[in-house]
Amino acid sequence: MALIQRYTEDNDDDLILKYDMSFYVSTYINELPSNLGSKISTALEQINYEFFIDDGDYYYLGGVIQRDTPFFFSVALLIEEGHRPFIADIKEDELDEYLDYVKAKNTIKDYEK
Image 1 (cartoon, rainbow, N blue to C red):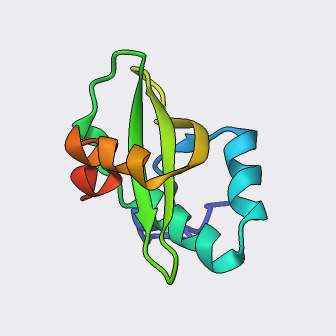
Image 2: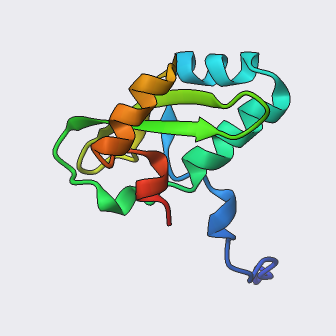
């Protein structure tokens, strides 16, 4: 008895996360107000992870979510050869800390697709 092929469409790669994250990062984002958490998740999805070298080192990126009071944050990103990018840490920052990332050209906007 021959098997019938039931699915012939390609997977939509846009629906697959391009990175992993620690339990802490996931919990932190989930505990933020929903609109803020979803905007941070969207910002993380917009990073072009191919810009980073697979050297097993951490990269620190600053980000900002524009709203009435801007929300500044930074993430620690681990890139290892043979593994998906791993967001190991996230924290809320002050404006001065974010401006340091801007000066060093280490913001999420600098690495967007």
